[in-house]
Image 1 (spheres, rainbow, N blue to C red):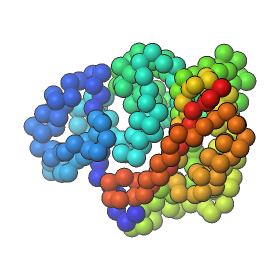
Image 2: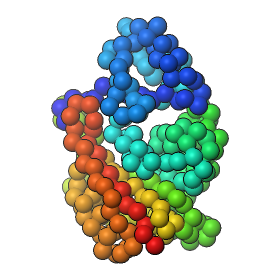
Image 3: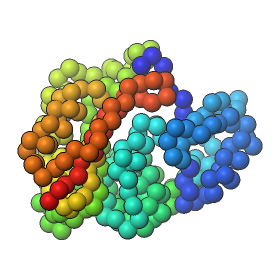
Length: 262
């Protein structure tokens, strides 16, 4: 990818009417248009001297700035009202809050994060957006089902947006985006990813849905992990795979949707 994609956002319809939020942005001279995903919008032009991140709507949690590719796994997961949902690698809470808004605050959502600084950021994000139906757990996602026995075969939907080598976010005109990339990362990270997937599968109810996603291109972290799941857990069935290449609007992303048959 040679340029960063434009700023994109979604409206927190739990706090504000969608049309009211869009009218307010246009009143302050933002030029926006609908995006390609439900409740997604693209900023074509910001008024001089004012960034979207500085607006009252953002500061009050009424709109949330989020990369389009980041929204995709949640729509693949298709969270529904009343379901038990687990976000296994949740911070900073973008997808967690997206699921809470889609389910209109009626789902039981558990958000897990093992980084204390990031968990504080997530709690701030959720509070700002007025989201109350999320239980935040400070823990590693690996072995979570052993730490919380209740969680064995407990969740209807699970999202594993795994730590990854972030190759999909690299921008060739901005060296800082690949400053920390290391060719050894995919091999080491795939081991962690498989441990997270194994724990997630044990916490999924029969008939439940799991979405695994990364923002990288590495086959070790993507396709090979899908193959590993299907080989190790014969009761898991692959429903869908999406591989998103950077196109000036979306950043690089990979997502696989599974269902547990028994």
